[in-house]
Amino acid sequence: MADTVAYNPSDLRILVVDDNQQMRSILKSMLNGFGVTQIVPAVDGADALDKLADQTFDVAICDWLMTPMDGLSFIQEVRNHPVAALRALPILMLTAQKEMRNVLDARSAGVDAYVVKPVSASQLWARLETIIQRARHVSPAEPRAAAKAIVAATSSLSHLADAYRDVLRLDCEDLARGMGLLLTSDWDNRDIWNAMFKKAHDLKGQAGSFDYTLATDLADVLCELLRPIRQEFSRRNLRAVELKTVLQANIGALQLIARENMIGDGGPEGRELLDQMDTKRYRLLSAWGIEQ
Image (cartoon, rainbow, N blue to C red; front, top):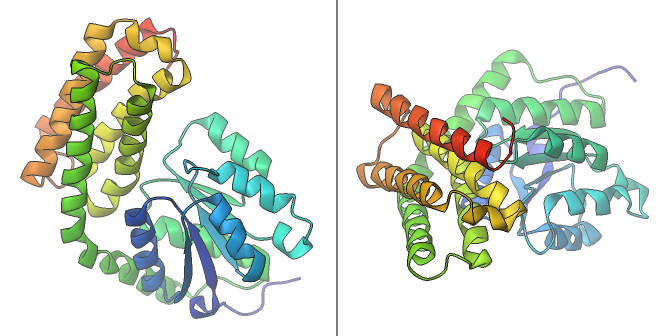
């Protein structure tokens, strides 16, 4: 069927599936800026399935790392659902998981679009519009209207900026507290390692929405250091002294950013710091036998 008329965002009903309240707020603000008013939150895949049982949606936006049911499992449940209309639900996966194997797994599960956090208003608009066009056989929004929607969505985040400064500070304090526990008594506590990875993962996915570019990049480095340990826990004891030094330096830098409210990429000093962290990360990953 050929495209006919443009869709109206206010007609859309969108399910937002993310276990992080701050990320749900970010997405709600962006979607409101687009003109979407019918937004229903879910805290994980199981909660989303419950809502799908008695409500109808045009699109689902879901994170990957959630418990007890993660985003990939949610997609698989939807695509295997006995109700044909639910099987056809357009799904956009919005996650900080950027590895190609994750993208391929999500595609195999049946995701319609895959976007890596942090996401900008223009990226989210483009992906949503593509999904809606395909599902409804409608034409894209007129360029002027699209540009206006993107500006409105970007501006709508401004009211969250002050609150996010506190979120960033608390997240960095949590990372520092976890690091302190690892160093003093709980180096073998897998739960702390997992909690630190999730905190870094969330920080990486959110900070960029508020222009904390250096914080996003440092959180990415931290995730890349912690992920291999989650996959093979014994790695924490290989080059452990070097690992502790890099983790402390990374988390210390994040705390400084939060404390000084350092927006942007930190200029030449920020880029130099990031280069140093990257060099140390690559050295450790190489020692662990992980190719980059």
